[in-house]
Amino acid sequence: MQTYLVERMDGDDVISVRVVNAPSPFRAAAMMTDGRITFRTWEKDWIRVTDENRGQIYAYCFVPGSYSDTEASPVSRGRTAE
Image (cartoon, rainbow, N blue to C red; front, side, top):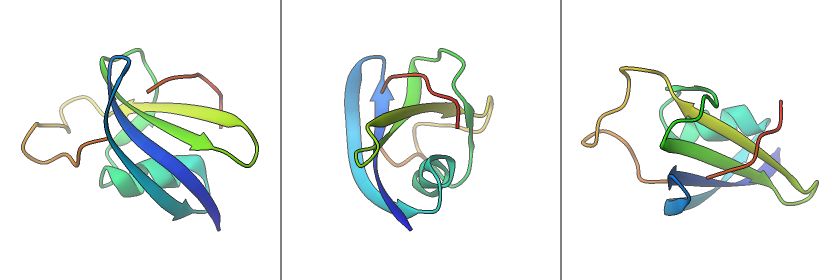
């Protein structure tokens, strides 16, 4: 498994950070957010996943209607297709 740096973003500000071992960047983001993400659609609240070994950044957002301030674990930018 690959190690990814997963950050929850509020615009350009990092809200929280976690290092996650996962088979793909999408799975790393899903593990951080209980699987309620999709590919980035320029939302203010989003997830940045960095593959530091390959120098790639992936961006995901929350599925509409699935996120609330009370249930999210706190975690920004770049656009690369997985």
